[in-house]
Image (spheres, rainbow, N blue to C red):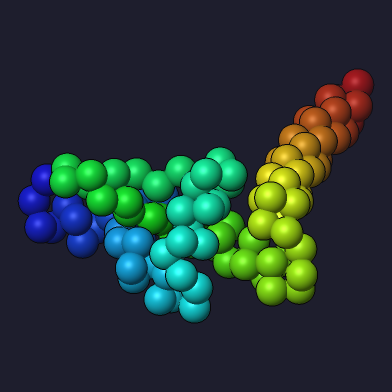
Length: 110
């Protein structure tokens, strides 16, 4: 990958651009918190060639949501489960909306 390719990927929400230290700093948390999210399987950081964890912006948004819940007193395991369920609900609602849209198009053709 060339330097030009790398710069183009910085706009990609899934590009693992942030080191663990930088990610923790951006979230205002500890590296241990990020490791705990990984152990709870909320986020799975990619690894650099040297084995270092790298996080994407999407993963940081998920981690920030978990941190909000933990800051409100929710145990980390429960916070991770809540975030997972919220994501699943959002995806199900998106799929349902697509089905409703497709179904309304079919009834208009009849």
